[in-house]
Length: 269
Image (cartoon, one colour):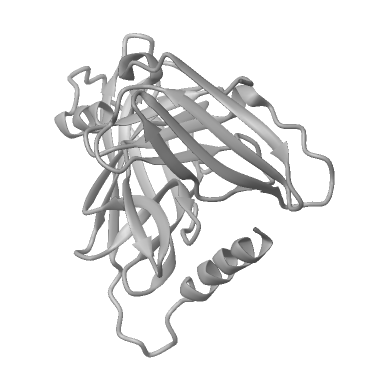
């Protein structure tokens, strides 16, 4: 497992180097903030819109073994108390034989904005550190800004469509149980998730997120038998100290051809 982890880390670092000076290169992604609409409780539904050049992709919140995780900094904003991000169901890609998770084309990433002072304008400054990949992977920084000072309450169709594209909840997908078995290995922990849910279509991919910093999670091996889907992978801590895993923070996403499912929490079998 350590070998696989180091290989993935090396691949990410090697493919993420910026182009040398003098190389001809156009930025493969453009961005803007869609200001959206105000909700009755005073929060705002807006979105980051990223338009990727043909053949390019960017990464989901958990990018996979060879991906670059996205980072968002909102500290330059004014009258902003908090931000929530809604992730539409992502795509599965193969990068140098390794699985990555992300988006291509036109990505609308809905955000919920909570003002510090209701009824006053918000200035939104989003500093993004993202990875964009085609034949090469490029770490890309961009700053998007918008001033929101209207009281529009009519939903923006593009944002509403992105909200509808998020994974089903466990209840919506018919999940009747989701449990996890943990066992200690030489390099960390092995985790096996047993999910009782109808098929999501095709070859299903299961992503397990430990839900706490400092833990690296491998790809999972999946197997379906009737209405039971099992997924097994390994976790490894970035440090040498003890790991206390909070099962309520484990998040499992099932990606299928028909739809995706978001499962939160994974109690013992």
